[in-house]
Amino acid sequence: MYSEKVMDHFNNPRNVGEIQDCSGVGEVGNPVCGDIMKIFIQVEDNIIKDIKFKTFGCGAAIATSSMVTEMAKGKTIEEALKITKQSVADKLDGLPPQKMHCSNLAADALHKAIEDYQNSQEKK
Ligand code: FES
Image (tube, rainbow, N blue to C red; front, side, top):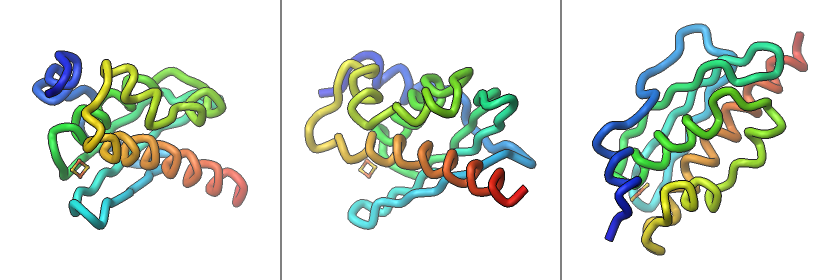
């Protein structure tokens, strides 16, 4: 049911953890399944230098959060904002249709973390 890439990211998730004093943090939850995902970003010169995640959720949620951190790392804010649930799922060689909402969570958490960073910049 799951691609090899999904299983790989589920078994060896990349960038797990949190960043102290991060530039932005995004948290989203899915009220249906109860899963929660949190993404921390460290931004320097408009580039996502570091990114970590914590996910309390299903295997697909863990795999998609791991993948989204790999996709966003080293990208500019503008490039990272273009990452969508579809591009995350495509990078994982697809997700079963009933699991697409899990990749939604990953893309949303990333976008929220960027929003949080942008809001803090505006206040400066
Ligand atoms: Fe909830 Fe996957 S089942 S995020």
